[in-house]
Each structure stands twice: as structure tokens, then as C-alpha cells.
Amino acid sequence: RKEAARQLRKLQQQVEKCEAEVQACEEALSKTEQELSTPEGAANQELHALYAKQQKSLEMAMSYWEEAYRRLEENSPQA
Image (tube, rainbow, N blue to C red; front, side):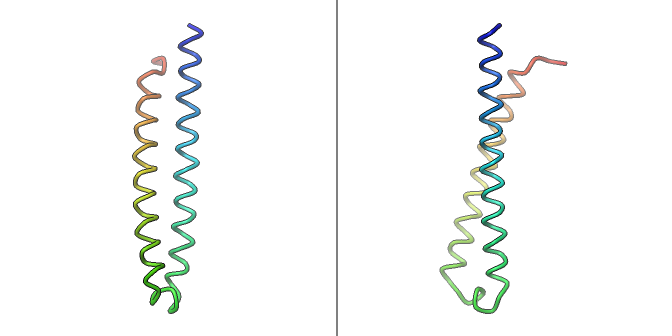
């Protein structure tokens, strides 16, 4: 019983860590979008490359979050 509770806490922490990572990725992407909305930013190819990289990072973070959340749900006691 204690082991199950410990496992559940560990999974919850993993979900929270993934959520924080998703939020950080979203904030970085938003900042880059703002920079791209300027004429200088729109012409900056490095900024476009950074934006694409940030999009991929967000997709990966979302994927990790979905997996962590799925595991948490599978191991949570049913209501």
C-alpha cells in the first residue's frame, strides 16, 4: 500500500514536471512569435529556424506529458 502511494506520488511529480516543460516551451514559442511579427524578425532566417525547433520541442514535451498522464491515470485508484 505504501509502495503504491509512493509510485502514485512519483507519477504525479512526473506529470507536474512535464506540465512545467510544456509551459516553458509555450512561453518561448510565444516570445519567438512576437519577434517574428516584426519586419526585422520576419526577415531573420535564424529566428525562423529557432521557431521550428521550438515547435518540435513543444510537440515532444506534449508527447511526454500525455504519456506521463496516461501512466498516472492507469495507476490511480478508480473513483
